[in-house]
Image (cartoon, rainbow, N blue to C red; front, side):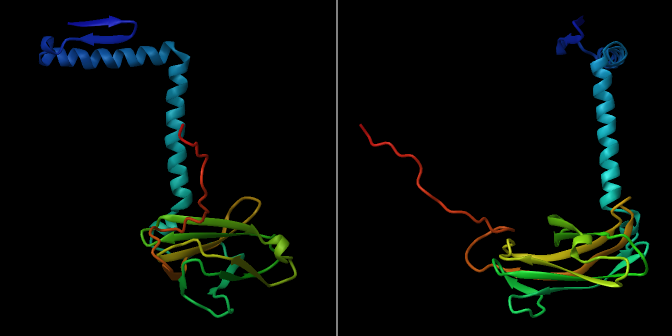
Length: 219
């Protein structure tokens, strides 16, 4: 038996043969179509679903552009470029291995081919599987960028490395502040290894202090 009660299909499984299942499916499709035509909220929900799927596709294209899909590790317009990048230890020495919790510095040299507006420098830290672990970006303007200089340096100081263990890769990029066009993108210019300094497990270090909570005396 199939009945329509306020837009809901009610049936008994014992009553359904092959044709019964066909009628059930057709009836469900008809009900959905009628509800999309007659109910504004249903139409809005469908629009929201389509918009959300479209945005996911756009985001995927933005974070994984065609150049990366084609296997390129470097691309951009070339108006400004990342000339060099290096990781430094606490003594200023260039390093590729660190202990968890150690201080770390990233230095990046940026060069411009002409009178270019201050770009944005973008940084991503990813693990071996490509998982995004951390990200940051900075406007090069306050760091000394001006149209007359051909080379500007940027430095990021990390007082205590929050990573716990593993091999990690950096992605660096320069984008125009006005329209976001890619001036220069470098995939994996630097890779480094982090070793645990104690028995802590996991990808990142969990920093914090334990304290006692409110305790009540037994009566």
